[in-house]
Image (tube, rainbow, N blue to C red; front, side, top):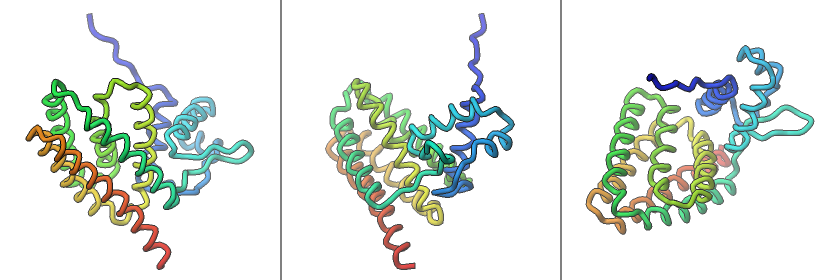
Amino acid sequence: MDKIIKKATLAEQAYDQIKGMIVTGKLAPGEELPEGKLALELGISRTPLREALRKLAADALIDLRSTRPAVVALFTSQDVKEIMELRKLLELHCLDRLPKADRWQLLFELKRNAAQQAEAIEENDLAYFMNKDQQFHALLTNTTPNKRMKEIIAAINTGGSRALLLLSETLATSAAEAYQEHLGIIDAIEQDDIGLAKQQLAAHLENIENRLLNYYINQEVL
């Protein structure tokens, strides 16, 4: 008997399309998202659109407002500091407790993910790279049995990916740097040296924070 293939709902398709426009910068930070205009452009009714907008808001990609249209979320330097503080605490905690039994399967998945990152960089598909970057960090933390922690990390990392849009003008360079840092983490895990892997991950997360904060410094100078 053939398995039933689940088709994406209209709400899921709308979510993916709007998220793609945010990730690629077609929808700018602070830009309003009028429901009528969006529904018309996407060719759907407002009901699935509103479901998509609620999911985008849960992912910290947009801000919902009661009497005005939703807007694409803005990030401040303080937002970046808070997001990165949480990421450092949670991701390093999960890596420190990585079960030995899970390491070789994790390595296989991380290497496959890294190959996809390299492909995205080569093709200059930055939206795809950001998706793979988020997936890379999810792989590092998904081994935790703590379901609530997984949910918190997923929400934080989505916001972190949104913050990376601030680097849109230099994201190609940042992506290449992040890819090399990911390879260092993979190599340390392959050496079965979790202490080194934690050092590599800590340095990587620190570099992400510095790239984002440097954006704000440069903007203030302009």
